[in-house]
Amino acid sequence: MSLPDIFFYLISLALLGSAAAMMASSQVFRQAVYLAISLAMAAGFYVLLQAELLAAVQILVYVGAVVILIIFAIMLTQQLGTGGGGGANALKAPALLVGLALALGLAGFGLLRGQAQEAAPGFAGGIQALGRALLGWAALPFELSSLALLGALVGALALARKEGEP
Image (cartoon, rainbow, N blue to C red; front, top):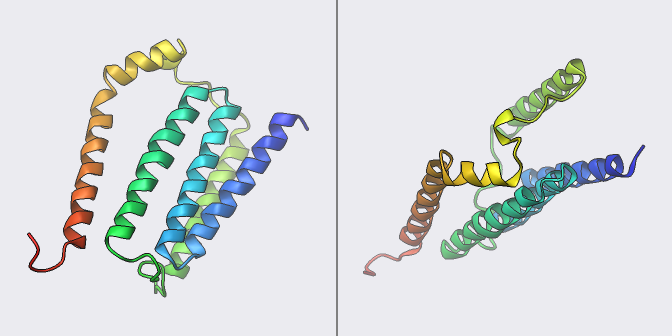
């Protein structure tokens, strides 16, 4: 077993552990922290694939912006210490079963396939091709995600506003 294989298994274990802890936690703030850890571990996969730019984007955009926005919204809505969102849920057991079935199905599909596909041919040029794509045809999804983040922030502010305040 090579060193990259060992790192792959360690990152996978940390990612699955933080994702399980996120699902098991009953406090919204802790769920956001576990989400940040999961997203940071996902960036570790990009490093193993020698895509350091994507790892940096993963850290900056998802961990640095989205999770911080979620934590900001939690603090604005004053649900920091409460368990609002992860308490007793009648669909917790069926959701766990569906998640396990999907995970086993994907693992089985990966084992049956045997080997991974090659990278998408449109990004064979490295960082230059990725930069052209991000500034060209892929710019629209990034702009739409910024509008979604803005809408989430405005929604959090609307929820945090008390009755009678302007």
